[in-house]
Image (cartoon, rainbow, N blue to C red):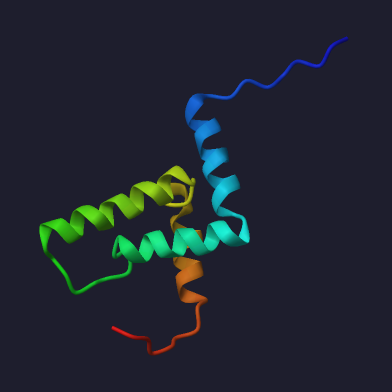
Length: 89
């Protein structure tokens, strides 16, 4: 009996491709750079243009399957498990 090939929805295929790209060491470097360029961690700017960029950072993380409501506990845990360090502004 032939094994039936699993069918993926287009969004699942896209998510897996995004994850494959960004889970490599080089991909993590690029994702970090993109998130920095988008101002993902900036908290003191309320300019509409900056909010648009920050929202796109969330879209990108959503495409990776990270920024999802069911991951809120894992996201909060990851944030709280980080050691506090005073960084550059």
